[in-house]
Length: 283
Image (cartoon, rainbow, N blue to C red; front, side, top):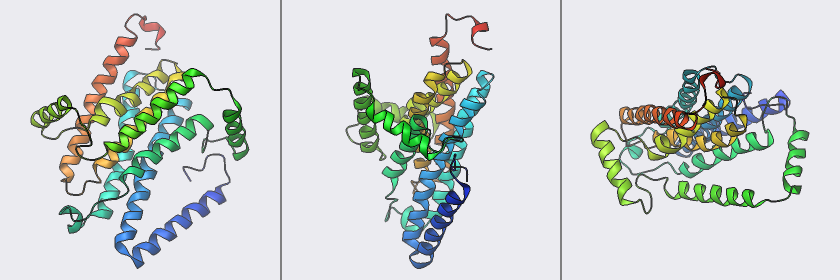
């Protein structure tokens, strides 16, 4: 029901009941396949719920302080962690822990939540008060509007970012620069559990900056930054899908990513607004 938006509750209730019935049947008939499907559903749903919650929170009740903005990041990450724990519980077996089997839905859990929040931000899909007719009208307006050079640049950059995200969704990824490999080794040595680059250097700081933009009244930046922030939420969940990695290590990696991203996001925000008087920021 949380994803219901402006649609009739009966329609969304039927959807979730049907999905639960299919997953339950799969678990009973083919437990291995059923566990993968259920983990895939959790991997898509929880980051999407986290992103939707953050979007509505920032629109309807913007943070009143920097630390309230930080709380938005940590609470959204908490949703992703819950989904990751559920996915890990579903896939916890000797075959996964020994590396004899892998979770094959990683790429979908990376892309679908980002696409869902992009549809929410751009078209209002599942947003309260926005019905199907409004979404269709916005979609037609999108396709009939003229294409500007900036739009084309943003589209190409977005597609390139998604391609890089998919290619590098494994442990080491493809064509990782030597400098980044050295940074990974350094972080592993210093922290005991290396935070993922997509989280502490990209997605999580972007989500914090989205919350800080809402606090400062710069609503035009909230949506784009939130979409980028979904990279971090999807990566957080994916961390827990590496079943061969101890749970304590996955939790520690996520914690390190969050506190580093918090410091980085606050530093970037302070640098961007270093010349503005405090009274203009609402602080």
